[in-house]
Image (cartoon, rainbow, N blue to C red; front, top):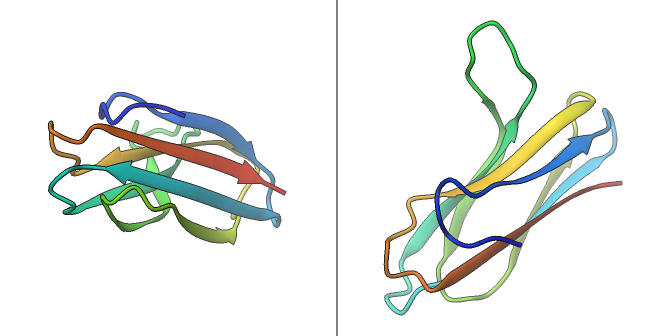
Length: 97
């Protein structure tokens, strides 16, 4: 779990071929939308983190779930994007299995 600070991330290790699941929620009185993103956290020559999956969620506190097959084995991280300062809380759970 983490707050909605853009610097906060949840990390874990993916296993190639297994299901990678993200469960996310965010609560904001204005109930707009935010974006979550699961990133490949392996270090590469570019220094960029490549997106594995992501999506929009309504900031109404309801959890959404997204899943894909992990394309590789190694470190992953999930974070929120486009979250306004008045959002009161958010969480993300990243699991493989």
